[in-house]
Length: 444
Image (cartoon, rainbow, N blue to C red; front, side, top):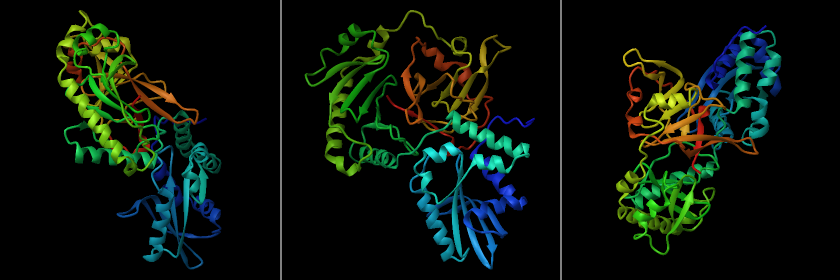
């Protein structure tokens, strides 16, 4: 009977487990080296996160000696991490550099990962030597701890806790997009996105001075939408404040729970070279400036004041917990995550408040699931720019998993965002997380 119970396993945990076994279990070392034709060898050195300032990091680098040759073994370990650009190629370059600098005479490169990851990840298939976690389960039969760690890691992969796969071209395009705006249109507000982006991330959001109004650049559809959240059920009020300023080339459309003033613009492909769209980008940004100027002519505060309900469904965190007792709120404004399932009644005022607030150092549009307890069936919400959104989990036909941000369907008082429970007091410190522990939010 397996008596080892683990809440979570990170890739670093697997790294250290493998290193421990390679040091103390000669049979495991031989199991690995025999896959590349090395029957007998002696371990000379082993290093975790071997870093080269130019060529990046090897998860595990060990050097063994066999027949008077020093041989490098470079290992990439994955559970379900972001597929980083040119990663197999960089392993080869690090190996070549190791030979040049005399660290070893020749080398072999391995990737160790769950079978599902190796079968479905094209970048992983470029590695010359592969070992599955399932193979390791067979090898370590009888070792309850090792088996439990590996089984938990496989479970994580199968449940899709983090399955963001980077599209390198899209990541580069986002970076160039941001630089272009900062250089040529500094008056346009855009949140800088740090980190890899998935293939569906192609709708940049331009910010306004109002948290409930943004400009969505729907690049693949050729739309630029000045979007007014929560206005879809208030069309008469909307036209009352916008009718006189909307020109002929503008179109008013309903987009979910919002109303948008739309301009048609050139379509651009985020998977293409950014330099191919310089002229189109100037057209698009000039169109965005037209929308900004239009917004200045609208009495936004009066318009939203007119649609405010007399009573709100959610006035404070207690109301929210009553609706969603197992919900999780990721608050990007305060950098804290709240787990409603831990709520208790405060002795001071008898109000229901989350007992557990967890510091969060991950930037939008990413979420880290482990420390915060996010699981596939979690009811997940975010607060961004003083606005609450619900997240919908999407699973594609290719088993890629991501989240979409949708408008919250209950009325919320402004007092909700000022609730004492949202203050950064008595919260758990955040842990440092890597890209392998992220989920992505894709604008829709």
